[in-house]
Image (cartoon, rainbow, N blue to C red; front, side):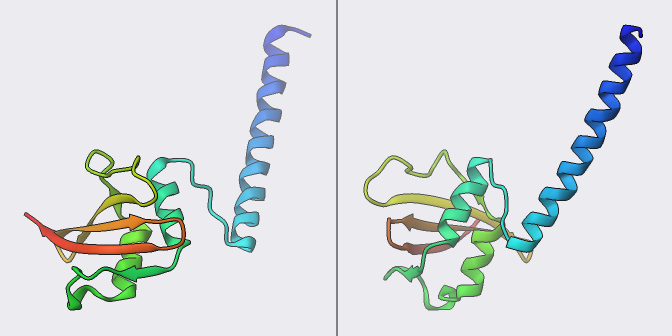
Length: 124
């Protein structure tokens, strides 16, 4: 059996195995409601969603909406350049989100026991 024939059979088996794994993990994720977060943005947002929310004193009353905050924590983009990820015990994150054709930025502190939402400002 030539090298090319063995390589062909190897690639066929590899393709079948990859397809099997994709369907297996997708079904597993749907059943257990898990998600696979490997990128820093996804991991930080998942960590923020897992903690209880606390509204800071500086947050305007019109932004004290849990659904609005959760939308930031679901599909917002963290600005790691501005965020303070080294401070202890609470890290500060700046999360940007487009909403109704406007850009907004949420400032949140991630403490070990909760997330303190400090402010939401409109970007220009």
